[in-house]
Amino acid sequence: MDITGTHDTLTGSAKAPGLHHELYLYSGEAQFLSGALSFIEDALTADEVVLVSVPERRERILRAALPAPDPRVAFMDPSGLGRNPARLIPAWQRWIAEWAKRGRPVRGIGESGWDGRNAAETTELCYHEWLLNVAFTAAPDWWLLCPCDTAAVGAGTVREIARCHPFLLEGGVHRGHEAYSAEPFAWDELEPAPGPSEEIPYGPGDLAAVRDAVASRAAPYGLRRERLKEVLVAVTEAAANSIVHGGGHGTLRVWTWRGTFVCEFRDEGVMADPMAGRRLPEAGSLGGRGLWLIHQLCDLVQIRSAPGTGTVIRLHIDLDPY
Image (cartoon, rainbow, N blue to C red; front, top):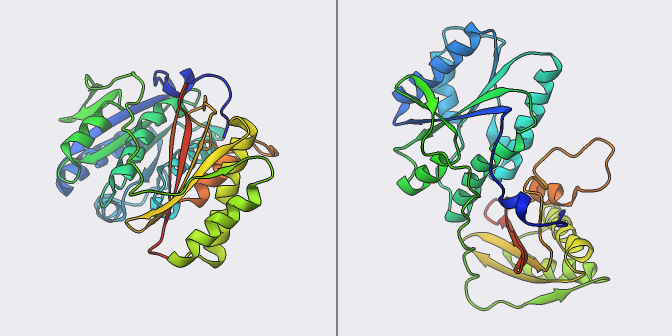
């Protein structure tokens, strides 16, 4: 967790001259196919490569509707990335970088899986849509179409998604989007922990104690073996970053809520980089990988950071699959 500097970068305007970030609001499969197929047809006419990353049911109907297989149309299965939206941007970065080496213009179709998301996951997914504008500011020019099914996504969430997209596809016309806002992302307050919870302070020399505290509280909920090892790596990274960058100490709280094991770390640091943990680590670099590991190992990560209040990081681990 890089938490030096000020909060300005984290809350700054979202501008991405390298990315044409376009929203496509639709209702039902027929409208989805209409927009997606026209987008792909335009790309192939221009001899561009298209990567499609949509939920499985949408991928099936899109594959069936394509007139013929084409090597310029590739599909990426987002299910392998898990439910943590922070893993999506690195996946796009890998693909864009690969085709940039070949000098090929690229497009993408990226529909997030909104179904079954709880409030915390929905907020983080909205933030991902906003953060795409930050992540690809220096990227090669490319065009990302984001379909969104208004029949499946609540009106409030649609409004949040809309403000993250500078462009809109509507009625077959590509245009600027009046709902887009370059203002800082509007965070909701973190949902308070259910009931009283024990606060566990930590500082230099306490990483083993942090691991022991988490392990003892995780065991009754079935977290064990390899999954528990992964969780302990994540909590060690979170606590270590507090010690190194967050004033030398922090506070840990642990609880369970609706099938999720939650570890919350609070410290006095301020995170300046909104992309910390969300960009591909540089080859050969040994530093700056703490948040990256946390995102790869946890099912959801919530981060709130501001001057005067410090940083809060919540690690969510699903209990049901284990």
